[in-house]
Image (cartoon, rainbow, N blue to C red; front, side, top):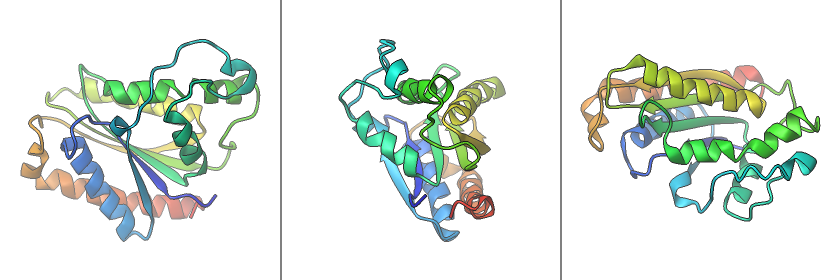
Length: 199
């Protein structure tokens, strides 16, 4: 495995709160000696899963869009971090659509026995969310989806940072403690990667 840490930003707001937290997390990762490749999925052109089930026979999606550039990145990354705002108690629509497009990987793993990421590789996955409401259930709901995604693609859930009570764009800058928490989480994540032997 020769890839970088893949950082997925799913907010439609550039430099919004979840993205600023992700940037702080990435600085911690880089301080820990790891390289990060950032992808803003809102800049990509891709659609939702069509439930055509044609991937059931091949493990590959037939849709010709920008997700074709994403699958190799996820397959080769040594670890992944996903950041999302909380919308209506869940992930952003962009991230949910992104995750659903890995239905082809689900078939490859569970039906065809040919997972894109081999079992036992222990590639760590980290989750970041930020929401306006101070409601733990919203963050838990979003996190549960992220955990299912990681498990389905043979990544290992390795932690999360879920912030609440932050709404306006870039308001997280008024919460330096949260940005510092993200930085520390990134440093720790880099250490987790080394311990997992994926560096």
